[in-house]
Length: 306
Image (cartoon, rainbow, N blue to C red; front, side, top):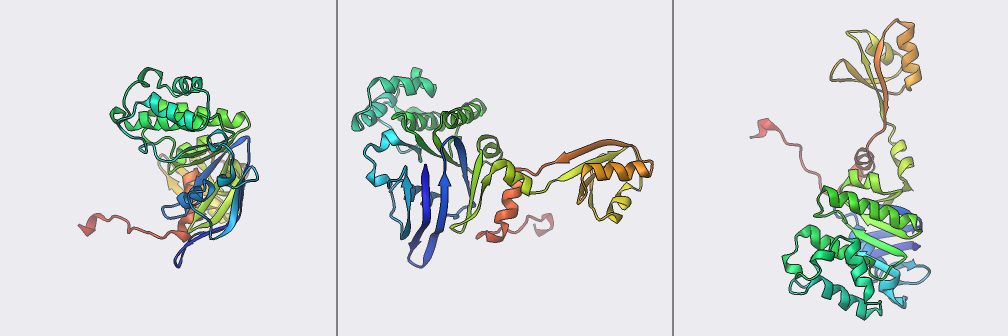
């Protein structure tokens, strides 16, 4: 487990991480989200002992990272897939890592097979695509068979098959009881992979909740379609609903549940051809939570501004 208590990091007058307190528990995938400049990278660096906190602390299984006896065997990390010398062969890179942490040499072949690199392990990393480098970084993270895994942008550079593979791998690692933390800008992928979500903005923790709970908190709406022109929109509005038009005689309704909408339609003899509750996407919920905290806000594009 990863535990942060009042974790704070300042650079001069700027507070990059502001009194973060959270628990990243084993047996589930925890997603780490935030706009650019939110403090995610700084927090990960603090977890891994690459920076020292100004105040507070972060522990890995009860100890700071720098106090771990065998870090590679306890924590596996993917931070920068390009941080490998291009002239080194993939297999040799992993063998060197294994030797530095007293990991059995045979483990290298295992992680090469697991990540789909067994046939190219003899090749120099400089000739690898970004996706192949990403797989090599994942292989390095898995090398020590650690109980805690931290992946920063794990699907970066992967093709659709690779994305599907890493999603399954991440979930299987959590199912084995490991602690898994992933940071990503891809909301749709995070919604599929993560069980729990931490959302940061301006160094502060804005949300710490289960994925299903977080998405439900966004409210969503109900998509309603009728066979033709009807007074349904006015009837629903009169009952306190907010109604917005949708293509194909559709209405997006908030403020009333499907049963209430169906009852109103039946009372007035209006036939419904569709009545579908819609949950918001993670991206929609994320934007609602973080929008007031955005540091960088672009003006919307307007055609008449040309």
